[in-house]
Amino acid sequence: MFSFFKKKDTLTPVNYESIAVDMHSHVLPGIDDGAQDVSQSIDLIVRMMESGIKKIIATPHVMADYYRNTPETIGNALAILKTELKRQMIDIEVEAAAEHYFDETFEARVNEHKLFTMGDNYALFELSFISLPMNVIGVITRMKELGYKPILAHPERYSYLDIEQLKNLRDWGCDLQINTISLTGYYGKDAKKMAEAMVDNEIVDFISSDMHHLRHASAFKKALDTSYVQRLLQDYPLKNTLLLK
Image (cartoon, rainbow, N blue to C red; front, side, top):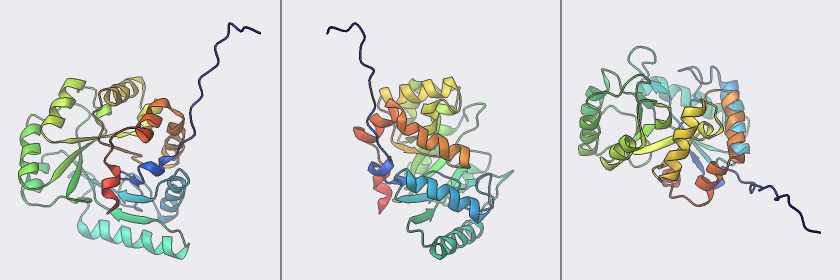
């Protein structure tokens, strides 16, 4: 019998196994606005593993005014977490770097080689949500000169940036990382629209959870049901797997 009703499109079930590495999260216990104790850390990590993540790179905030994390604070928190993972026989690789805030101290930390990096010297940093720093291109250039590989965290959330500006940052050698949960509308319709435009323009280099708490964990799983995340996971030149080594 002929039907006038079009069959509803269905999405293919996927998980995060194809990227393997979550390279932006706040799962270290008690050192920033993420997990507040090791039990919360474990809860988040188990949720990430259930969604197919094989390796986690924790990136606690480094901010002059709020989270003055050091090699000691990060190393101690990582050791506590690893001890608990071993005790509970949870088999996952966890490393640590940092999410550096582009504040008044950031350029000096770049010049003094004090950035906490991941993989082959990748350095994750975030900007103010209010305005673009005037010296951002100069600092990115300096990072490259010193051997860093800069990654801008969640550019879809900076309302003052448009696609052409993001392309320009990328042309200067800065990789771009979006939060998958942006594609669910978690941060609002504007961030969702920008994240989709970044995917459409093929300027996404890394994706990650930016995991802080269980609400993020739920959204991270929900993101797997979106067509844009499925595109990113199935047919897109992401760099996450470069961090497996």
